[in-house]
Length: 93
Image 1: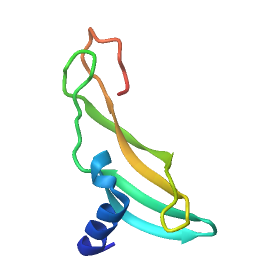
Image 2: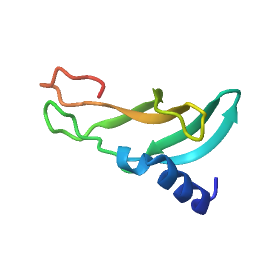
Image 3: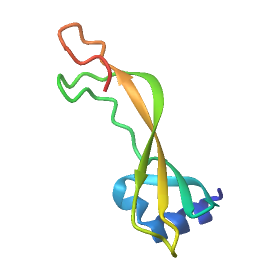
């Protein structure tokens, strides 16, 4: 998806308010699929505040109200981080 198309899609779908940007989109059947990624990453562990190490990514699916009659499915690719602090009980954030 081009930068202009992504900006337009972010504006129409208001994904910027969620902190994500559109990377691709498709209409399949009755659904509009929007593929997104976070605008910024925060690798800091919420429990101990130590910077984590990138582990992998996971896709989260979110449903929203219809866009032009098509219910959207947001597919957000979210990074997961390992907390390497030995005293922290959180392993994946």
